[in-house]
Length: 155
Image (cartoon, rainbow, N blue to C red; front, side, top):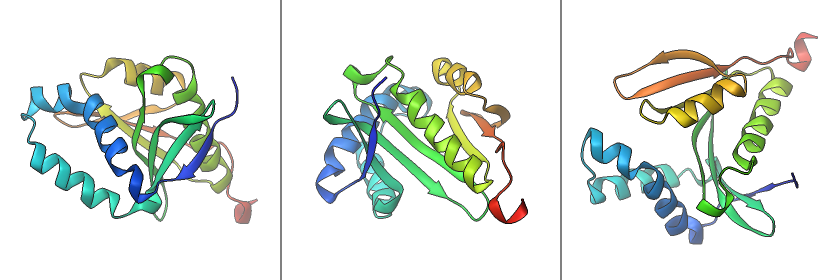
């Protein structure tokens, strides 16, 4: 697989990122609560105000999707990872998640990720990548990746 890059999301990326998130989550959200477009747009806009959390995944010369990575005091949280249809099933999502895991390893931080309970494909991928089940809610499975290295100051 060719390497991907992450570039900071720009204000002009907002509509593409929102539409991508909607295309992935619409069926899940509709089945659970019903899709309220105004609410979903407002929630995304609230998240996107913290644009430093958002990176556009660039692969093979084009924008392939996005990653929203939140940093806590003692963890990394993959809040969102979505790929455009032509880039799915090609190992790109796995490569991006492995890079987040490597960041967690380097910094000695666990990595959190979740998915809708109905999204069994994502759950299988996370397990295959070494994430362990860490709980569930009425709607989501939660997973945790434990770092394999101690942070620099603890060595």
